[in-house]
Every structure is written in structure tokens, then in C-alpha cells.
Length: 112
Image 1 (cartoon, rainbow, N blue to C red):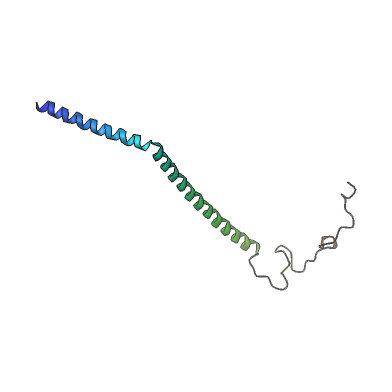
Image 2: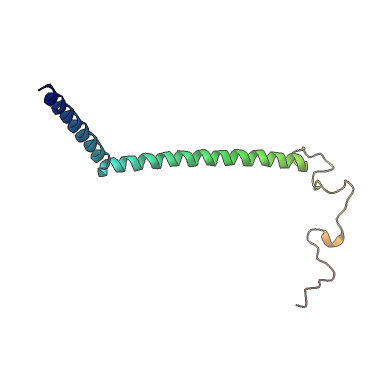
């Protein structure tokens, strides 16, 4: 008699456990639950994209400052070197064909 009571109780407990498990799974697969889960994933993805964009901007700013340091573009302009590019020597003058607003005396492509 104790065996039968033990197995009856064990079977009833297993049935309740299985029924509860199946009901939870069915509720998690309901359309409302799926919509909520999809919305949460979309919001999470949006936050990740925003963090990625901020990281990219920070990296761009850092790289830009490194390039400005390497090229000497962050030096404040003084009177003599204000219009000069960093690679040109201080006394360098533009040739007549390179002056702004001037054309070359002979253009090889003007007949074509």
C-alpha cells in the first residue's frame, strides 16, 4: 500500500511539473510575448548601435588629432606661415602658372 501511494504521489507530481512546464512554454510562444521579446531585442540593438557610433566618433577624433600633430596643422598660425602648407619651405613662392587665377601659357590638352 505504501508503494502504491508513493508511485501515485510521484506520478501526480511529475504530471503537475510537466503541465506547468508546457504551460510556461506555450505562454512564452504566444504572439504578445513574442512581440514584447522582439521589441526588447530591437531596443537593445539600438543601444548597441548608438554605443558603436560613439566609439567610432571618438576614434575618428583621436585619429584626426594624431594626424594634425603629425602634419603640424595644430600649430597656431603666425604672420609668416599663415597661408603656407606644412610641407613647403618658408621662402617658397608659387610659380606664375601656379598662381591663383592665372592660366598656363601653353596647355597640352587645349586642342583635344
